[in-house]
Image 1: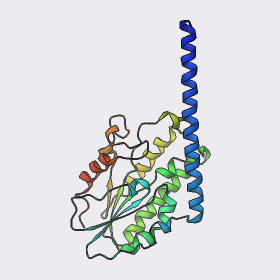
Image 2: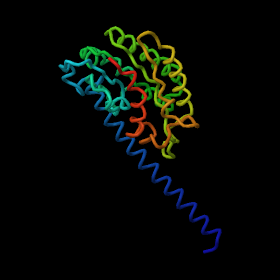
Image 3: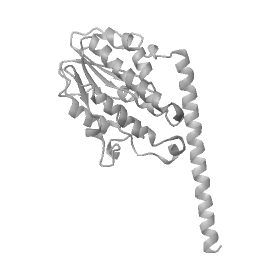
Length: 244
């Protein structure tokens, strides 16, 4: 086998391997979203995730609320004078998070509400590019309403910017678009306008992002999610804000 033939064989092998990896990824994603679609049909807002939402406690309540990024956020271990309750649900959009607010948050009578949500809206842009502007607008409107509902409970609100993304893996590239990080920046700019007397905007990128604007690899579990070190870094910065 001469050199040219060897190079052609290696190139063909790599192409077949890349195709196989992509097919496995697409199958896994298809299966994941098929299950999610059917679960959402049975319980559109995810109310059954926390059937006994009200919890009795003598301490002030801090609620972490939102999507999978909120769900995975562990309680800061430095906070001893409050009960921290997590009400995140993986895969949820801002509309779903808004829709379950009364049942999952207001009933807890929280002193502080920490909100992290939005990426599941914006990651749909590559699938529905003609709806990009509407997706961004609805995401901002829903976040604004979640903050308003939070204020109406009498709580202090900590609304975090949407976490930056990690390194884009090769298998995601056919289903991705550069419009998504641009949309995240647009929504984060909107979130920053919500700051007020009882609303603190916590800029997650100041903690998580590297010089390229993506999540520092040491904090990344995967493209969309943080590992324990990432949350530890967030908790180190946010703990001082979470004073009931």
